[in-house]
Amino acid sequence: MSKKKATIITYGCQMNVNETAKMTRLLEGNGYEMTDDIHDSDAVFLNTCTVRGGAAGRIEGKLGNLKTIKNARKTKMIIGVTGCVAQEEKEHILERAPHVDIVIGNQNIAQLPEIMEKILKGEVVHAVLTDKEDELPPRIDANFGDGISASVAINYGCNNFCTYCIVPYVRGRERSVPMEDIVNDVRKYVKKGYKDILLLGQNVNSYGKDFDNSHEINFAKLLDEICQIEGDYWIRYVSPHPKDLTLDVLEVAAKYPEKIARNMHLPVQSGSTNMLKAMNRKYTKEDYLALVDRIKTALPDISLTTDIIVGFPGETEEDFLDTMDIIKKVKYENSYMFMYSVREGTPAATMEGQISEEVKKSRLQRLMEVQNENAKECSLSYVGKTVKVLVEGPSHRNKEKMTGRISANKVVIFEGDSSLKGTFVDVKIVTAKTWTLYGELA
Ligand code: 5AD
Ligand code: SF4
Image (tube, rainbow, N blue to C red; front, side, top):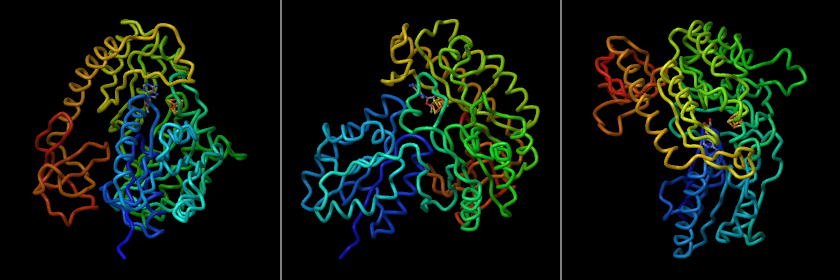
């Protein structure tokens, strides 16, 4: 009998990518072979995101599409919804989409094999497992596919309640993973040959604040412990909250220039102090700029990236120009820019001064133009330099060339052999476009 097949479609952030890797491992352990072809799948999971309305809408569409496929299929097809939409909507998903068999929240994915078995045996018709919102999920192994990049969640949940954000409502309160577990996981992945390890948390700087011995353990200490692990790898982390980024983190990063990647994603959200206050971000424009100065002084070779929201309720042209100003001043290598999206149940959803879609679109467009210029300037600054590149494999566009990333997370294309995949090489940058560097092996 041929193996059963399963597909997981992942939406949203790196935490979802991490949870997909765990589900992959669970499904494989239960005899499933993973495929991208939903038509050929005995089980399809949507690992969902609800951070902005657009993401949630795409999932609705996909569920409609899956219904048609399921109805046309001769054999049983399990449809599961996991991730933040599952956590947020719970059994309500079944009201709108009764063809869904399983709704499973972020803390409960370990129960996947057991519940699938019950459904296949007919012992259960629909399963909704979305409790334990505020617990640490059980440690489960993951399969990250490419064997090069792995991620490790260091803390879950968020206590910040930025007024636009749904995350604290769906991912619960902040809770940290014990340091030994994280260090052991990183050691395990390094031993298996992974070269790029991403530490994950909604606010990595909160790491350890919920521990009894929080005066001894914090994010800087964790980074230092991880860097004691021997091997050829680098560590990245997302995301620090600007209000909590402490000097000791910068000191540890300075101490390990080879091990801690030279990229920091530091979400600013807005350049306007008024908007930041309304967003409950707890820093001003000046605080943020002073922090960037401190970072650039401690780590002169750092590349900064950010998240920005345009069109938050009450945002005036003047507020928007403050955001423009900040991206011009900081010169981010990349910015993830979003139009404000109403999330029901958050304070901003009912604030006065909601901005029209038209104004949001035009502000986003204006920001993008400036950001593209910045990105191009950053890219051009690499020309003539030799950089360390982690080789990811043949380029999608041109199989003759190899693609990889530098510590600052920029993509590099160069001529090389596919045997270099998963190794670090030195590449001399010859030319650059806005988002990509081109070079030759040094
Ligand atoms: N509307 C638009 N963008 C949002 N983000 C979070 N919530 C919203 C929202 N309601 C953005 C923030 C955050 C990123 C992950 O998503 O910029 O940093
Ligand atoms: Fe959302 Fe703010 Fe928490 Fe980030 S820090 S997850 S934006 S509430």
